[in-house]
Image (tube, rainbow, N blue to C red; front, top):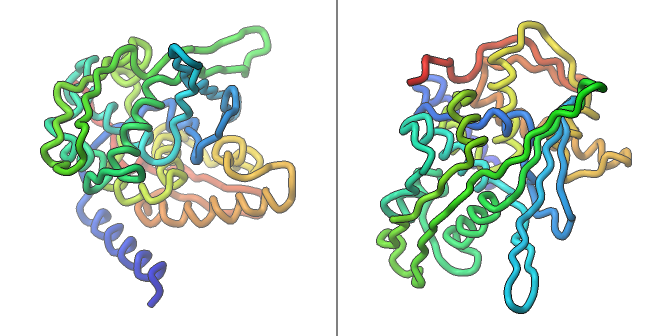
Length: 301
């Protein structure tokens, strides 16, 4: 049996376990259920944009100014910032605090995020976490709405207004690498969004789906959509590409076909974890039927 088939069999087995015994309840920011972060590094673009209907997400990376030159910090991308957003939302709902403590040690913090063992080196998980944390906390984010031609509506915010992140100069004993007193203070706008509109998710489902950032986005989008949709709706491939298709071109037949194939494949993994979602794949797009959210809402503190 190939490695790919073996991993798929293991995935389905773990998904079936979640059907029978749901995992740990967590939360995800509503904005990032509707609009997605980059999947790969966009490089030197001045800004990065995604669209979902009348809503638009724009991200501008931070630029550090030093004595010698200006340096672009870069865009948050991939699975790590998505897991960080879920972890932050869950901590805010749990503690009601605007300043979040990041964990008793780097290793335990990474396990909480579902990243596995803490490893050092240039390509290790510690380096990856540090880079993506700084990119996420330092980026300037705009969320705009252009559905009303008579109004200009938008919000400009950052995830964090202050951070104090301590990192060991050695990566030999990851379990002992203290992240305390590392803290991040969330911006007023982002904190209010998490307090007022957290979207319930299954944290074990996120850990299972984290192989692909697109799987994480489809899962968060579907469970949020199913929390309010009352009737079935058809979503075209062009609309889905505007929301999720940052890795494939939309102006060529090959690019559009590649996106449909990729999205359909990753949707299959999401539906294995979230079987109560009702989605039909059509030649022209998706038909999404009303269904219960993956994790039911309950009164917040």
